Amino acid sequence: MKDHFPDQWRAILRHNNLDSFESLWNLEAGWFEEPNQRRGGWSGVSRCDLDLPEGGKVSVFLKRQENHITRTVLHPFGMSTFVREIQNILRFKGASIPALEPVYFAVRKIDGNLRAILCSEALDGYESLENLGERWSTEGWPDRKNRQRLMAAVASVMSKMHDHKIQHNCFYPKHIFIRFTDEAINVRIIDLEKAKVKMLRRYASFRDLYALNRHAQGWSRMDRMRFLLIYLGRESLDRAAKELWRKIATRTEVKGKSSLLCNRSAF
Image (tube, rainbow, N blue to C red; front, side, top):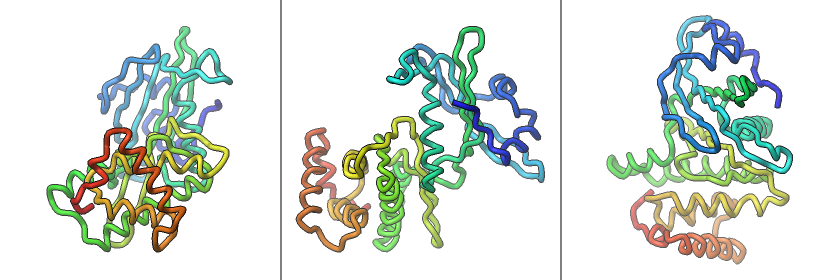
């Protein structure tokens, strides 16, 4: 895949003397996430603050990996896992589905080693739905109106994703980032490496609905049903909606999460 280097970020990286693969690869920055050693190599993440040409700063996440590969039918000898991630980031961006803002992407073969860089803008001001749930469990949950606003915002993004037949594959609260204010609720979806385009919308939707239901701790049974209705754009559970709910509930129970369906705490 070709390098991806948007003009608006080129000027910022050039201002910081970081507008080349070599300068980004050699940048001394502490690990935000310690490198994981797997897939025959390593992959790690650093957080960096960049100076803006007009003054001020912007934060980015700099992901670097070496010989961290995945194999596909089209790439039997392996490709960087960042290739699939940037492809999906650009796919989401092309479909106007809020995700990460790409800053820089490139792959190089150096001294026999496959190195890749994927840099994206940090989601400052956002918090994962998982962290929000944990905090609200201690501080108190939003009122019903704001819970519904939040569910509507997440359901809208999920529905748009499925309208484009995109299955996230790991649609967990920790991958759903929220900026929650009185005026608006903004949503961003991260961790797109495993996202896939399916043949039909219904093939894309079930796994993501089930994954969110299974991992959304703190949601009551009523809130789970309410989210499904908002996602489906319906006022009540008709026959088709009930059947979908039963499938989601059954799948969740099979995975040993049946207790979540009976959670009485307020989302």
